[in-house]
Image (cartoon, rainbow, N blue to C red; front, side, top):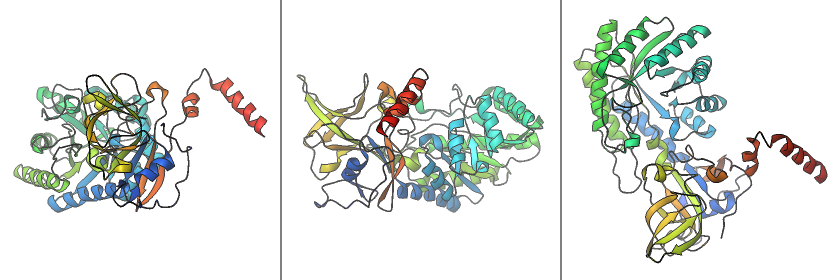
Length: 459
């Protein structure tokens, strides 16, 4: 049985009532997920905004409690960005880390203060840098010497003095998937501390009349389940900040340790946010004091650990298949187009049948999607005996799902529904076939004529 999709822009109705069979259906954010699947269609992203707010507050509380100097929490937009989420992050007092002109444009359209935006990226285009300069972003994070040249020229042409941070590669090899490591010296990100590139960037920034150096930044990787890589990176950044202060004969203002705290997908056990804030806050405070430096503004850039576990994705089961070798496949109406992470680096997930959440598992399935090659969502998923039309709920899908979704096989991308106070709200509408056709320049004129003709005929 295939799923039915609610029309784009459908307004959410009244608060869904709990299931009459207590515990039989999965609730998320106080809402009946089976009801949401019927109302909005599947695949469907859900985001518990109340959980997101609590994670934002946990970071702010943690840094304020454990770091005696000023601190700043910067939400990493690459994990998930919508207009609603921009406004939520602003309401919670966070800054925003953007990595593209598109993210900057969405933030501005949502009313986010550009003075509270950091612009990242290892290959920002000149157009993106000029956009950031015109918007007045709070910090541009310089990733290379050649980018510094481009930025200086753009700032001079616009007559704007731009505050910048230097992204350095601290040479820390984080214990995570190879695709998620970003702090090693032999990588594409940042100015290596080894070899003099980072030191040269300090001198270059200090000599520029158009760039104001405010601090040092590093990011060692993501989905970290131990704090040691972050602590080692902090030690190296403090050492470099002390060298820069001596070189410039004045201390910098900021030290930015990036993000990367992991979440629980299956059996991971990452440290809680408060432990991260306590460890980093104490380490940075003692490290700065021991080198005779003032308490710089401590910045962190969480993304996944704010939105990841607040997300849930719903799919409709199409059917199951038994193979001669004994494998049992369960097919759903989404897959790698709305979640490419399993295909990219073997990401693992937990799932339940949302409409039969109280039933114990009786067999193990390979959950597969509707797309071509490599579309395996969950390799070993214990579930009750699945039936066509069941609703499969996959946990911890708030980060890097909506953000990385594609139109592979020309399948429209899912809707995203935000949940707050037990009430659903359509946050991003479901993409339609018409949306896909709008980008086709070869079809635009005759397609528009057909639409006008059809409209006139109906009238």
